[in-house]
Each structure stands twice: as C-alpha cells, then as structure tokens.
Image 1: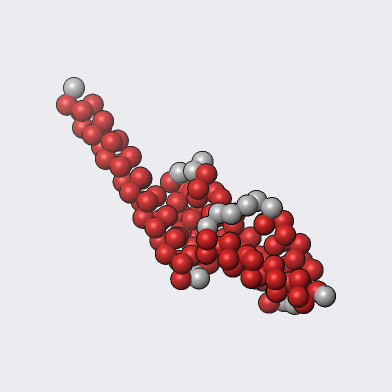
Image 2: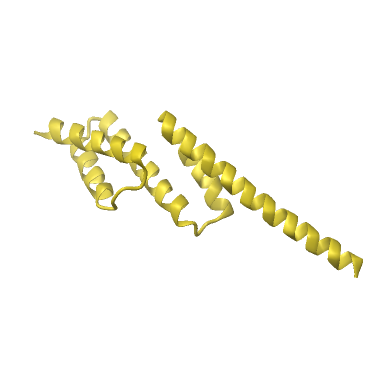
Length: 116
C-alpha cells in the first residue's frame, strides 16, 4: 500500500515539473521574441511543445516564429518573391504576438518594396 502511495506522489511531482518546465520554456520564448532572438525563441517553443504538444498558444507562436525565420532567410538570399509569398501566407493567419506581427509587417513591406 505504501509503495502505491509513493508511486502516486512521484507521478504528481513529475506532472508538476512538466508544467513548470513548460511555463519556463514559454517565458524564455517570449523573452527571446521581445529581444528579437527568433532562433532562441524557436528552440524554447520546441521544448515547450515537447511538454504540451497540443498547446494552441505554443503551436501558433512556433508556426509564426518558424515562418519569420524562413522569410528572413529568403530576404537575406535576395529571393524577394519567395519572401513576399511566405509573408503574405503567414499574414493570413492573423495576429499572434505584437512583436512578431510588427516584424512580419516589416518583412512584408520590404518584400513589396524590393519586388516593385
């Protein structure tokens, strides 16, 4: 009987650690987003999604950050049409985060300007 009580307590403890880890990863992602470090944000979001794979907030942020990294890569390579296409598609998803939305708008304007 004591053995089952110990197992139950350990399971509850581990579940609490998972939630705490998730929250720490999400905080780290948001801090990285605020500082403009998209690669660090993406890594933190991937860790958060390992803890809670179905979390809509983490999924949405991950999709936006990964998309912005792809767009930035297209811009850096001078592939303005690809950047515009990706940015336009990502913009259709609506707002996710103020900082990310501002960056997306910046990329859209840059791509539109350089295509024309």
